[in-house]
Structure formats: C-alpha cells, structure tokens
Image (cartoon, rainbow, N blue to C red; front, side, top):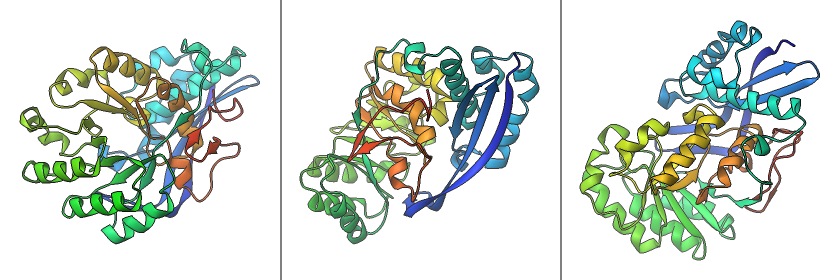
Length: 327
C-alpha cells in the first residue's frame, strides 16, 4: 500500500514571549509532516531554526522533495541517507516512527526496544532579561524543582545571583547560547559555582570552543550548538562534560537514540532538549528522556496554547505521550 505525504505549517503563540541571547520571539513556527498508509497516519513536527540556516519555507520544500521517493517506498532507514540531519529530516523521521507504531498496533517505545515509558521531571525555562525581570519570573516558578536560566553575556553574574535569590531551593541549569567569551568565562563560572549551578550549556560560540580543553570546569559544561549528531562526539570529548540531544539537530529520533547510546559509551552526561514547539515535537524526545540525566522538554508549558491532545504535565513532571498524540 502506498504511503502518501502531506506537509503543513502552524504558528503557536508563546505566553509572554521568549528571549535568549540571539533575540526574542512571540510565536513558535513549526512544520508538520504527515504520512498516511491506508487507515494509518503518522505525524512528526519540527522547528526550523535560523541559527542553522533553516526557514519554514526551506524546510517544507526539503520535505516535499522526498514526496515521490516516499510514494515509491523510501522508508525510515533509507531516509537517513536521503536527507542530512536537521529539522526537515526530524519531521519525516518522527512521522515514520509514528506510522510504524500505528501500522504494527504497537508503540514507538517497543519498536525502539524500550520498556514502558516512565514520567520524568523537566526543567522549566526562565527567559533572558534584566536581573530584576528574571528574579520576578523566577519567583513565580520557584516551586519547580529544576529551572533552566537563559543568559546573555554581559551582566550574567548578576542574573545568576538574582535567580538564585528568588528560588533558593530549586536546582539550576544555565544556558548561555554561545554568549560568553574566553575572557569572561572564569568570572561567569565563579558566579555559577557560588549559586550552586549544576550544568552550563554552550557557554562559548561553537566555532570558538576549542579553548574549553584548557579551562577549569568546576561546573560541568554541556555542548548544545556544538553538537548535532554522533559524528561530533569525538571532537567534543576533551571539551565538554555533557551533551544536549535535540531531535531537530540530530534529524530525528533514529539518530537521537544512536547519539544517546554513543554519548553514554563515552561517559558524557546527557540532556535531552528541545526547540520551541508543541507537544507533538516533544513526544518522540520522551523516548530519549528515558536515558537522560537532565530533561528539558518544557516548550508546551511556554506556549499560550498547545495541541489537543497534548502532553500531560503535573507541575514539572512530564507524563509519557498518549498514542493519540504520537507513538
């Protein structure tokens, strides 16, 4: 039976906006690939990311280019060679996983060789702003067990101290999104040590991170923008203590699971993260979360509305996806 492909885009408002070192956004713009075979339908959502040269229009065109190949029988295994890692392949790869599960009357977790999925605690993101604004935002989320704090370079020690004062009991991760420099590293690291920060994501630009090999890292440092697929791990091994696996970077769940296994074999700590998408984009990453030290899949909590059905959150506890959503 022939598999058919449809591609669509959606825009989802972000509650209160979202700011990181590279800029601000008011909407999450996503692309959804839908594969249909008879009565069975599989969906995958991706978030095109300008940092990697992606646009909504470009990603949709990349997916559409494989329409004829899919109708001729291209499957998930063939997809890995047919398209490079990135958002477009992620949408298709996750749609194939979903279709395979529906077609086989099973679950994506079972197809991946995993046991029943369990709930996990996700980080909750504090958007970049002035120390005063970030402290006020943190105070509203102070009861959450794990906070992820967006940083921006200049003034970060004050931001870190303000957030810690506003949430004295929360565990903290910080994410600089490449905004630090080699010169500011030690000062910012000291502020993280003083605040009891557990993990620092991507402090330096990805093309300037070689110096991390010679810098003291009393707080573990995690590769995000520097990491895309398992092919990057060898270079990153002397530079980073942890890696952030995002399906939009790996090009889907297939490579993400491979990356997870290889990162573990190299003794990296593992975070599973996300771009700003809906529950449909988060659901496949829940499989990776089963083997992660840190889970950062809070994007649906940052949206003004989400898909229905969406993922269920009890506070910061993320429940496994229902089959009606994905997998």
